[in-house]
Image 1 (spheres, helix red, strand yellow):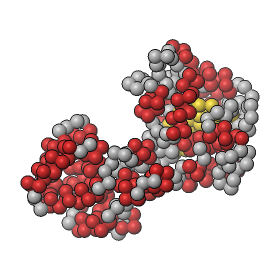
Image 2 (tube, rainbow, N blue to C red; image 1 turned 45 degrees about the vertical axis):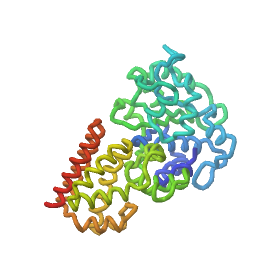
Image 3 (cartoon, rainbow, N blue to C red; image 1 turned 180 degrees about the vertical axis):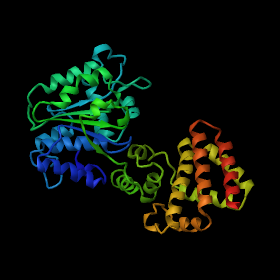
Length: 372
């Protein structure tokens, strides 16, 4: 993993590169970002940069012996700790990261933007509580007491420290505060509020923002060969979560924008017989596409507000012409009403409400909002 493999986030990459150029490398850093962000990918890319023997002007080279090993997650001086749970074959004190290093390599290389759900599915720990145990902390202390084998730095990447048992967290406090020379801790979190204060006080925080819609769309187009229209459609409903965007590649229909436009026309014209027919089609579609229609509606409302407030250049919609026309039919009160309607519909779908009833009720509320 290198910076070039991560879409966008240029200012974050430059900030990290400058720490190495200046020699001001914090020995304990926390990469904090929401699920689906580049927090883990950025930590792995930084670990590669730290030990690269042939750095370019802005990245690790990717080809030196150190980079080659780090890319395969087999570098002897780059260690990984991550939450796990007991399985049929691994129990008791054996439930530590080293016992799951093979599936971890598969996960980290193939799903670097994935979260705990995807990780659990890879190693077979679904429906079990993830944990970083006290036994794990003993292993960390043991590994970091050794001299570096090959690299300039020993790096300990702790993924999701919010799953760390209090006894494990307390056991590494001194190590975090006074690590061995040339040792760097990289803690990667999706929920820093769940981490105990004594850990937080010992790390330098780096916030990783969610991906922008443009960054997600560009990544899907370049890495997954999606048509730009579908990439833009997916990016508009995933709230900066690249992992979710990748998951939706084979699930989202290509014509959500056209479906939404036709739905709004039917609601605006109070065409109730056709709305009943649409409710049947909505019921027959997948849960992802049902939710996607409402999420797309929320995205259109955002673009509508931008269009109404001289922010046309920031509009992300695949069809800005429709947004321009749509914005002329809505005032702020109607936008707020529709936003609440879409959010409520999404909420009920999430809680397994009847899709047909939800769609019909939502359609009637939208028709009513248009008439006010």
